Amino acid sequence: MDGTQMPAAAAALTARYGAGAEPKAGPWNDTIALLLSHRSTRGFKPDALPDGTLETLVAAAQSAATSSNLQTWSVVAVDDKAVRAELATIAGNQKHIEVCPIFLVFLADVSRNGRLAAEAGTELAGMPYLESFLVASIDAALAAQNAVVAAESLGLLTVYIGALRNDVQRVAGLLNLPPGATPVFGLCVGHAAPGREGEVKPRLPQAAVLHRERYDADDAAHRAAYDPRMADFSARHEMGATTWTQRVIARLGTMKALNGRDKLKDALVALGFPLR
Image 1: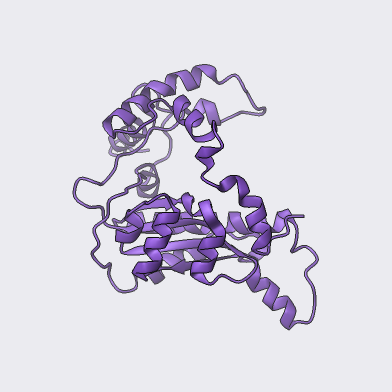
Image 2: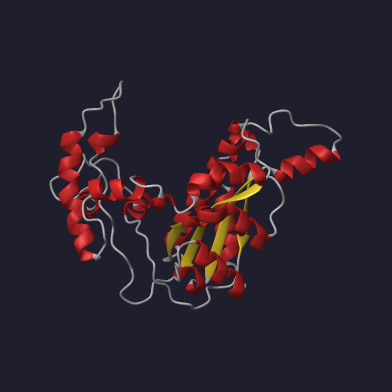
């Protein structure tokens, strides 16, 4: 890292980890700076984006790694206002789904390869297994993250919508999905509304997630150091759960917090994923 990059790198690491918790600074460039500046926004301008933006984001998504080049993912761009309103309701009334200029639903999709096999007059013995669903979900996530980085490089902001999994069968019906395709998450893309640009959210100290040679489960001190940083962030953004510890417990501590996702396995089986 040259001397001109050091201040920018230091500021980005402080924003991401908090003062005093920064990891060692290393090689630096504009791509790394962009990645560390990631934040979510839940307030979008409705203004249309330049023609071809959607296709550019999908091209970036298709450039992500995909297991064995199976490409077991698809994406649905949803413009219909009525459908968006239904999706927003499924996702717990997240109104930004209705406002953002681009709303995408990323799918784990083995149906295309199933059609390929049918046309070839053969069967895919590995299709019904959990591994195939896992590969498809990972493919979708890798593709979406490429799209997010591409969007942010264009000055756009995003937010993932995992709450579409509250009712995957209803989403599948709204989008006319074939058996073997299921929503993994949604993605809002657009320009942030004034004052809704969001803030870089602090992450756990690297020592809590970076293990050298063997896993070290003695992370209580790292979590304790992180809690006040998340409490400060939560206070600034009027978030219900203050510390990270409280947030984890609130999100996973009751069945109610799953919002129906406790039935996800049965729903996936009904949508054509046997999960053997």
